[in-house]
Length: 119
Image (cartoon, rainbow, N blue to C red):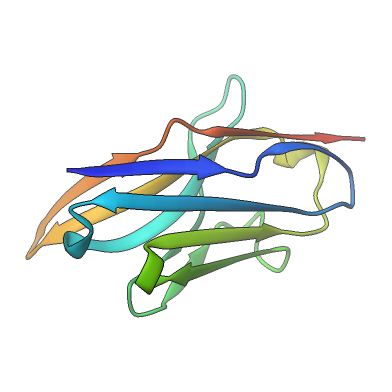
C-alpha cells in the first residue's frame, strides 16, 4: 500500500506562481509513474503532468510551457512548479502514485490540495 500526501496549494493572483509537493510513503519500490491531475467544479478530472521513475514527462495541453514537473526518487517526492497561473487553473489538484507489477497497475491518490487563481 502507498500513502500519498500533497501540500502547497493556496490562493494566488493571475500571473503568479505556486509550487505543489507530493510525498509518497509505504510500498514505494513498486511505484513507477507519479503525477498531478486536477478537477474543477463541474468538470472531469484531467491530466496536468506525469513523470516516470526514469524522468520521462507528459503534460496536459493547457499547462505545457507554464508548468514543470520534477521528481526526487531518493525522497519519493514529486513537485509541480506552476508559473503564469490563470484563473482557469483553479481546481483541486490531486497527486497520483502509480504502482506497477509487469502489466498490472494500481493507482494511489492523495486527498487533494486546492489551488485558486484570482483575476
